[in-house]
Image (cartoon, rainbow, N blue to C red; front, side):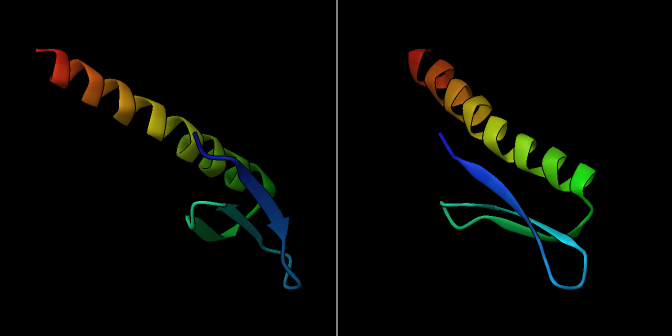
Length: 56
């Protein structure tokens, strides 16, 4: 599972990033939080789909 963070840049935009290397730039705080949340949960969906496919 990924662990995301957000950081406000000097120009006032907000970057969402993860320690796995994923990043999205140019957000405001609300959209950066949404992107970070989506990234964290996307891996769970992918893992669940892979588990289901392997079980078939």
